[in-house]
Length: 311
Image (tube, rainbow, N blue to C red; front, side):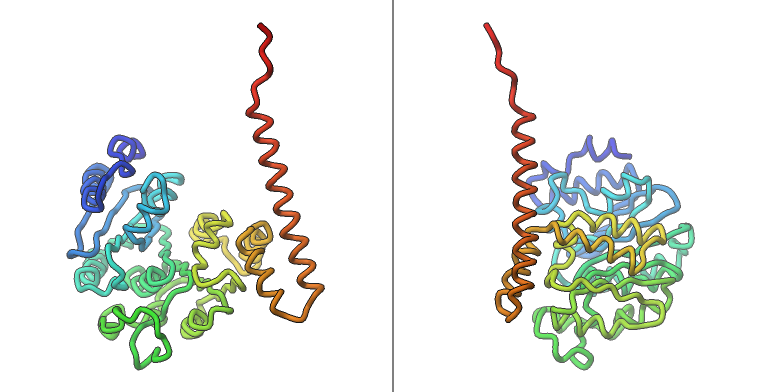
């Protein structure tokens, strides 16, 4: 299946419309491509009986990945999995009726029943969608990073973000994301407790089948931080295989000690406190990281040097 992504190159598409047209072509060969109104589309890659369901922004895919392939596709191709990617052209929290109808249709057709393992994944508004649409696949696993529970002003009047989306309908089908998790086998909610609004949404997700995974000091864009640390795909793969747990996640989080952005932010926060010892420890970590990176760069440059030629 990978050959079709090489023959029809998404990375050279000049416009978003051309990119979607090429993905449609690929869908004809490897699965399916279904437009869902003007602002969404569904891409299905038909692999084995393990299904990764991801919610992704077209803009982010094209900006973040040199191949311009959705993250779900990259992971699925590596493992031979099937994947279903719901693509968003605009930030509408997937509340358009065409998206709701699509998942209702999958329920009616028992689409998800044909897979042995199903994982729903998303971050932020895409995490909201991963949680809420998991209702369509009872027994699925859900991994959501910094998800919103709802934008319903009666439930979340304290949420000042997403002003243009607050008028969307969060009370009808697939509405309140935490309640939609009742059919999931297990769910993992990853969030930064130091981001008050994200923490308030996370509180609404507390349920017996939900494991809360805290990422202190990674910031609002926790998914980007985890990706920068090189653990996001590992996190998805562990959740799919049933190997994700709080201790395993804590092991992954140790990678932040090697993340320059995290250490820089940590230094700023510690500098504002009255803890000189903490500041010294953070500075030592940062210095060690810079030195290690400099040593690696020097070694790479030395390896690239050509030996002197004698004429």
